[in-house]
Amino acid sequence: MNKYEVKGVVGEGAYGIVLKCENKENNQIVAIKKFKETEENEIVKKSIQREVKMLRLLKHPNIIDLFEAFKRKGRIYLVFEYVEKNLLEVLQASPNGLDQGYLKKIAFQLLKAIEFIHYHDIVHRDIKPENILIDNENNLKLIDFGFARSLNLPDTLTDYVATRWYRSPELLLNYQTYGKGVDLWAIGCLLCELTDGEPMFPGENETDQLYLIQKTLGNLTHEQMEVFQKNPRFLGMKFPEIGKPETIERRYLGKLPQKAIGLVKGLLRMDPKERFTCLDALKHPYFADYPEAQEYIKQIESRQNHVQNDGNIKRDSVLSQQKQQTQIGHTNQIRTKNIKPVPNFLSGHVLMQSTAYNYKISDQHTAERELPNMKKTTSVDKLPQTQYNGFSIGNGFSFAPSKNQQLKATQPLKQSQPQIKIQNLNIIYNTNTYNYQSQQQQQQQQFPQQQQRKIIKKKN
Image (cartoon, rainbow, N blue to C red):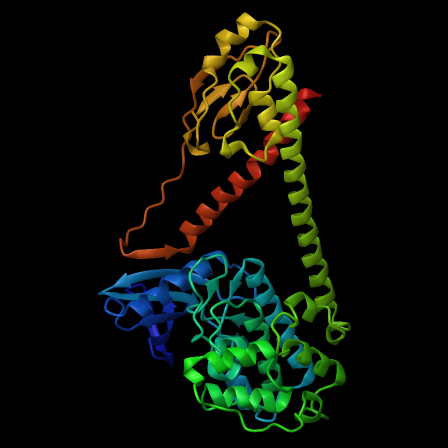
């Protein structure tokens, strides 16, 4: 904290305060979240760990940037980029709602951020005006990932997350499993609030919240009503009779254009299975005249096609590998004596497997002499760092069959890696450290593809 000069207090919450500070080294203005009772409160510690983990992964123009996290005198400090105001302050300055053009820009940027989060199988679970920052150029930044959660974890999901006014029916009914639709519901509530300055469903408790939702959108689904009746929290409670629902069209007639009403209706569908996804929302006619949205849709579809093609390539690689192993079992006596499975670390890299394990043997005695030298490991990280006359596979492991189908090795390589020194031993996370690690991870992910191209070129 010594390298930062406090300029003032930005805000204060249940778990701590947010300070506006200046970095003395580069004069950069930052926002520092200072937590209270970090050591004693397990809930706070878990929230901090979750937020740091999520923000290290989620790097996006519409998601707040975490610079570093450190610990001092038993308290955790998170250092973020500084943004001037939040959406609640914007709404307070325009109590009758935002301009439709401004509203569309906010909606598009928020959907971009949430689509990126959902692509990584993460739900934010606390979308509200206070957690959306707006800079002087009207660029949006989503913040507060303390309640964010990965959908790939086996633990039961908690229902007490989002602020009550923005909770979907499945959260209010204490569903133990729910999905990305909870974020889309919150976006629908938010867009309506930004239209006229009034909260969509300002319930005083869970039961009142459910009643207000039904008063506008109609009755809960049959499944949701059964869950309500069996939930001990609502034991003995009944909703007042609801005649004809108000509907979104009547409530926002003259406030929202017809296309915007259609978008909100898709986001606020009672059944989460029928609710819009982020891509559905971006493809809605509401954004048809917004060029940035159309360009972003193309990027999403291109990414989806790339993922699908990668899946098909991996599937074809497995089938091809199985076919090659079957053929070798019939033609090669040595391989039929002791056929060993391909290690897990090489699964999916068919060209690497073909080179390393399915090499052709013309001389049985030569093969018997060379076979013991073929070392197999269970981890790519454990592969020997050895330089061969040719190309390399894995971490310094290479194959360069000569005309006699023999492998020649030279002295091990000594690879030098930059040493990262952190003077403050209490630092938990630092952007520079993480960027280096990310670069190493990207190189490892790209490495097999580079080697495959070299193998193909070598064979040709």
